Each structure stands twice: as structure tokens, then as C-alpha cells.
Image (spheres, rainbow, N blue to C red):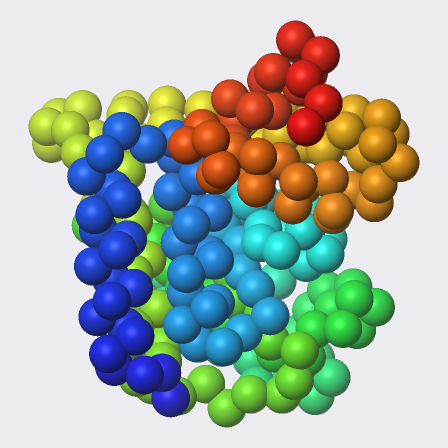
Length: 232
């Protein structure tokens, strides 16, 4: 079970960050990182629905990214089901759950044993899901899942800060922008990894640290790497 004081602090810090101008890609990455830290998990990610397909927008840390990509490619997995049903999907032990055989294979290869999908609600519609990953089997406590849902709802609320008539168009535009940001970040990771002789996951860490140390957005650093020759 999560620490209540830590939950209050995390929620407050996350809300304060969202008051300032933000990139959707970074908000969703921050959601995954803060929630996985609060619940002492290996990491997390976010998948969203764009043009009638669920797409992987971000995963933290990078070594977990294959799970998001697999769900995007196959449209199968716990977070796909959470997006489709609007209900939390929690898996205590992926080795014992037979619903997604190929997903289980990917999870076993990278060392993930438990997973949960937390839906991102917009009224009666679901925008996508927060993906949570554990390296060990886990009985998902109801209070832990409720805390994850609160943070997910908070992030979703800030994605739709427009009038009721413009909400859906705005959300679609924002999520497409987030997908475009992911693409340029993926390009930048590859360029930096090759230039510096790094693993891709390490290149991503270098980019994030460079951005945070200089109060820059991650996508700004990525664009500078791709288009301006920046090599942090």
C-alpha cells in the first residue's frame, strides 16, 4: 500500500507542474514516472487512442518501452483492454494469466511479472490508459489502484482544458501532437546513441537530464539534436 503523505506530496507537485505551460508528452511521461515511484513499481507508460488505434506515447524508464510498442502493434494487452472497457485491468502475475500470450512473452523477456492498466476517462469516453509495470508478482491493492486513478484523472483533466464544444477536437489535436513528439524523441535517442556510443536507454537518460538541468522541454532538446546538431 502506498504512503499517504507521499501521495499528498506527489499529487500537489504534479498539480503545480500542470499549472505552468506544458507539453502533453511530458505531462504523460511525468504521470507514468510519479505514479510508478509512488507505488514502488519498475516503471510505467501511457497509451492513448489516436485515429481509432491505441498508440504508445511514452514509457519510463526506456527498458520497458517494448511493452508499449507491442500493445500498439498488436492492439492487445492489459492497457488496450483498459482503454476499451474504461475499467482498471490489473494482473497479479503475467506468468499465470493466459489472456495475452504474445504480450506475456515480451514481458517475460524484459523481466516484467505484474501489470495494470488505469483508464483515462473523458466523461463516458476513454482516451487511453496509464500502464504500470512491476518486476515481481503483485497483489494490486484497491487503495493503490485508486491512488493511480486519481493521478490519471488529474492528468486527463489538464488535457481537456477547453470549452465543452471544443473538447474532443482539442484532445485529438493534443494527442496527435504528443505522438509527433514521441517520434522526434525516438529519432533523437537513436542519433545521440550512435554519436556518443551509448545504449539507447542511456541516451534517453542523458537527454532527460540535459533538459531538466536547463529547464527545457524534452521535445525541445530532441528537436535540437535532430535538426540543429546538439550533442549533450
